Amino acid sequence: MEQETILKEILNTLKEHSRQMNTKLDESIAGLEKKMDKRFAEMDNRFAEMDKRFDHVDKKFDNLNKKVDGLRIDLHETQETAEFAASKVIQHEKKLREISMQYRMTSHCNQSQNE
Image (cartoon, rainbow, N blue to C red; front, side, top):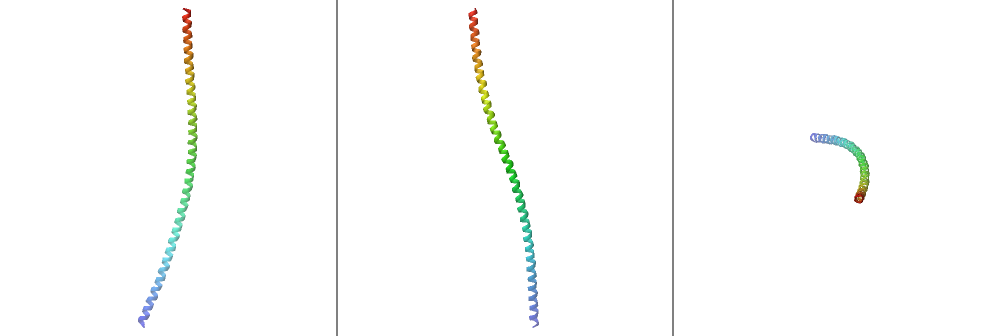
């Protein structure tokens, strides 16, 4: 009988120890879950901040693209204006050569008549 009582006490002690271990494990798991939830919340906040920064960078790139597009248009218009001016210069030079040739011919003809 005494042996049976000792075995029951050992069994009860083991059961109590098992409950205490389960309680400690449950508390540890709950603590880890809280820490993980906190870390995930921090990561979510960081990702949200990064998203805001990327949105800001995207806006900057959009503005930069608009400026570059405007510069391209300005450059194209400047090239067209330069081409137009160059063609006018060529026309005027041609006209001046013609006038110069006519003047030379008239001068030459006048000199020939005077002689």
